[in-house]
Length: 591
Image (cartoon, rainbow, N blue to C red; front, side):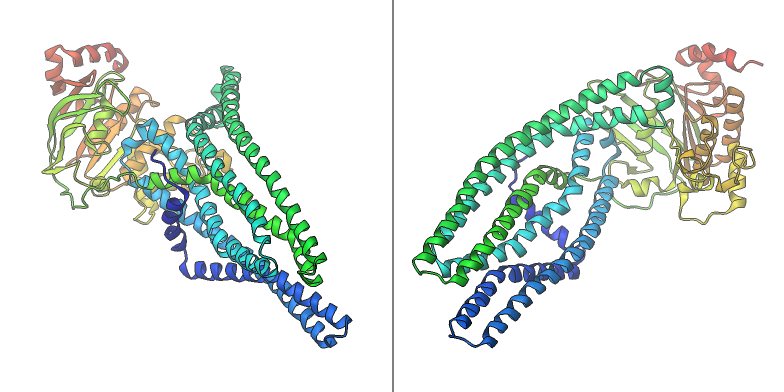
């Protein structure tokens, strides 16, 4: 990763942070400056009060002067407290709003990335770092802005005051400030390196935790006695993560300990200088009392600024940098065009390799699908069927060759335009923890939910809403976690099929959607599918061959290559790969 300093990262973050709500941002920073001014004026107003009290006691000023000094001191103290409360409240509101805006921005970015990114381990690690950085980017920006609008204002006023009282006091402040600042620069380096090492391990850690506690895993994990295995992996990964964090923290804290000793020396130096100045008559009693009373507050604020504000900046800098780098990743910027509803699909010498893989998943494939044709893609597991479907639908773009919708190349069109008329049920379909009706209608949220239309769709998918499992019909919550019900894998597959039917489409893909359904029910579903997809382009992917006779044409995949194509009868006559597969399964479909 290219090294970038904190200033450049802040310059990139500032406009993002400010445009969350520009009016509120301006108000917040104005209040922060006012807070810094009021805190900075505490020492001068305190000196004013004590000097006037001393003058009154010596008969040099009237009582009214002392009372005026008290009023000024009270105004400054009360004003600083009120402004501090308003700033804290406003900052919290702005922080929450910025968190929401940055989260939306990150998810929109992920939505625009090519789907192949989710097959790339490096990209998944990058994404993990970006999510961590997103959470800390608000705090990172806020801390630096606060350093300018509050702490810088305070220290400028205090420095001017101390310089006026006794110029040499400024040197003591510098002796405190410079070493601690250098410590935070070192912390930035330590924690950035730690984050680079932690991101891939953190994904492993989260996965092992899910294997132990996730609903999708816990039954098998307990039954097979695999819990202890995952627990060991979990503990080992946690141990490595903790070691990385521990080493970074130890290095950082050792450096911080050294400079705090120097800061303590500066603290003592200020007190000695004050005492010497007072005894020699260089400063008044009021100035001594005011500065002495302000020393602890001044050191507290400086420690808070450097060790916490700048410390947070140092520890989060690496993750924020990852977040910004992630937002700069090239997007799938295809053209938004109106894809004709009735068009052929052509593959021309298409090859594809997954990220970080050595072997091609699909090799030099060419074929043509006519508009309205039903095509089946068959082959053994791992033959490249699902990869081919992702290429046909435009989820992936080929490394070599072209996929054309009419004359439109999938490399040149946006996914939004291409997917508009496509529906699909993939092998690993989603089981949403929502109601039955929402699980179906989520595929086309732009149209209003209509129970009569849903009834028709459910009949086509072989789904009965009046089944005893669906106790509230379409309003049945399909999750025990939310006081609902759990249903079988077969029912979930029917819901997934109904979801694909509900979406308006001209092209529909069934990518092995019937794995949890018996062959007889599978035949019924495919026959119903043939009726629904009439006059539409339909693609069926399966390794179970008993129900694909309905296809106009069958494509046979083997080891990433298209080895045969033709009708069921033609392929049986050829006695090739298809005939071998069919004969090995023929007994499943005999009466």
